[in-house]
Amino acid sequence: MKKIPEPSRKRLVILAKILSQSSEKKLTSVDLSRITGWGEASIRRDISSLELHNGVSNGYDTKILHDAICTALKINSPGAEKHRCCIVGLGKLGEALLESSVFKGSSFELVAGFDTNCNKIEIMKSEIPLFATLDLEIKIRSMKIEYAVLAVPDEKAQMMTDRLVTCGIKGIVNYTNIVLSVPKNIRVEHVNTVVVLTGMVAGGE
Amino acid sequence: MKKIPEPSRKRLVILAKILSQSSEKKLTSVDLSRITGWGEASIRRDISSLELHNGVSNGYDTKILHDAICTALKINSPGAEKHRCCIVGLGKLGEALLESSVFKGSSFELVAGFDTNCNKIEIMKSEIPLFATLDLEIKIRSMKIEYAVLAVPDEKAQMMTDRLVTCGIKGIVNYTNIVLSVPKNIRVEHVNTVVVLTGMVAGGE
DNA sequence: TCTTGTGAATAGGTTCACAGCA
DNA sequence: TGCTGTGAACCTATTCACAAGA
Image (cartoon, rainbow over all chains, first blue to last red; front, side, top):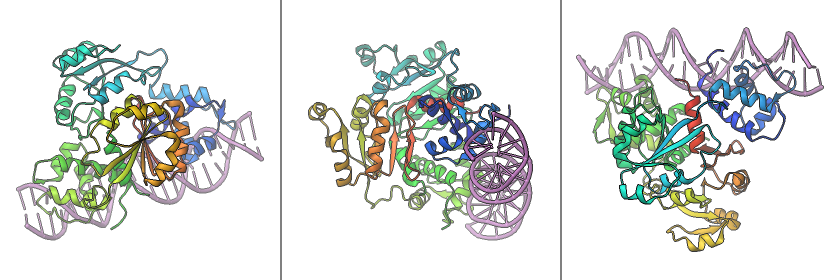
């Protein structure tokens, strides 16, 4: 299989999600175009890069296509081990992310929460083990944590990122208001509400 | 000024943020390349599309460049009226977003929170006015709310989105785990942790 | 000498348009 | 007839490479 271009991959991730949500048995590129707003030729090319050849003249079988995308992108593989994540910073937001059940049924597993406030981690009751930030390096390595959700106060964001990077973290979901500096091989997604809103306003119409 | 291409705009938003965080008086394209990891030629072209001509042989003046980007992208314009936002769904997550001070100092103003649970909105103490979801349409129109942060349970996500769309909302920051269907002219950013993580894993190395 | 700004070359993605299969 | 899959054309964005300014 040839390498799938970056924008294609992004769309395929969304497509997979749509397919898993859909109750239709078959979907055509026209259907998917209507749902997503993307051009239908574009959708067909994205899918054709999977070299699945499932759709000829019939539209795509929802389940088969979904599984094919997951396999190609190595996401949600049923048997595969889940990716281990942690939350760094247990303020209001971190706590909300910790307690919410968003991770249930996903291919990610939340295995640790960190906060500098030792009192807090003792008092908080949570199904997820909580640790002092002091032990960040030790725990991330020993627990083989791959991804971190960053929800610390802005002024600690870069410092904590540097520590995560030295532990060999693969990616950071950044809920802070700070643009983080990381080595090229580490992925950061900036999902802070204000930053995202700013991007929307700046976007052309 | 010619129209700025989409990827350029995205980078400029980030650049503006970096500039506002930086304490340096001058920054060269090489400096910015090191910080961001982007090619320096790319950075120079992004900036040159502002037709600022501030940098010749000296690097860019941090403040001037910052303001120029903000002006060009119509973000953070000092005198301009702030964009009015609301939060829809005041569960753990919505509440955390409501109480956090992320909106402070930004060009956005949080002016309303909505929840179906009337008890909750009476009991909750908040500086932001809270309303029943029943009044969503009325309030969004009368308060001229432009953007919504969606933090409702997954099963209500699309329904609530449809209601927001009919009120003429311009964009939605989507914290749910659902891919939303909206008309082309409405912007949606998907910031749900699991979705973002999935995108990271799928991303090439 | 250092750095920007930008034509020109290259690479990357999207869309068109149609052959081919059911 | 209705749909996919894909060469070919088109369009967009990045990178190269260098002239020109300080």
